[in-house]
Length: 161
Image (cartoon, rainbow, N blue to C red; front, side, top):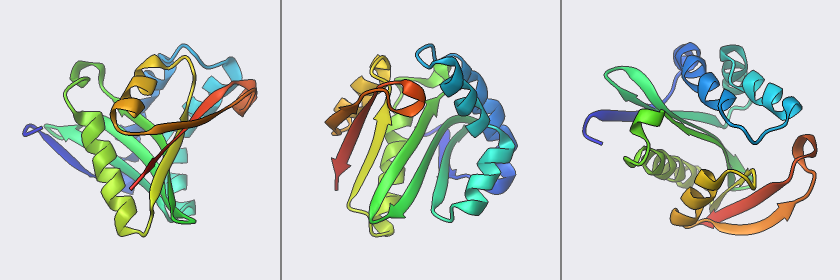
């Protein structure tokens, strides 16, 4: 990690964040057409900026290498003292190097500072990489919601701290 910088992204970073995130999201093959359209919309610079403005507790964490974003995590801090982890994205070239773990740990520390006692998230049951990651990072599967978001199943996870 000595070649990387981890930090909270600012409004001025959102165009670069969108440029980084959108192609990764488009490659995810387990979302239906409607869910994919929503995911791509969420990664637009306009929507990322809007989230920072509308949701005062929205935090985007970026990992950069030589000034370029190579990892991105979005989460919402403090809703009833529970943190919601939304996205963890890492550039294909830098996966399995601890970037996802570093961003998650950064997010957890941020959540703790803001009074949270747990972090939770969901993932598609076909996202084997995410499932493996969450298990390795100490998350516990708390349930499956059938035909949830856009008619797709999701697995819910939590990690207490």
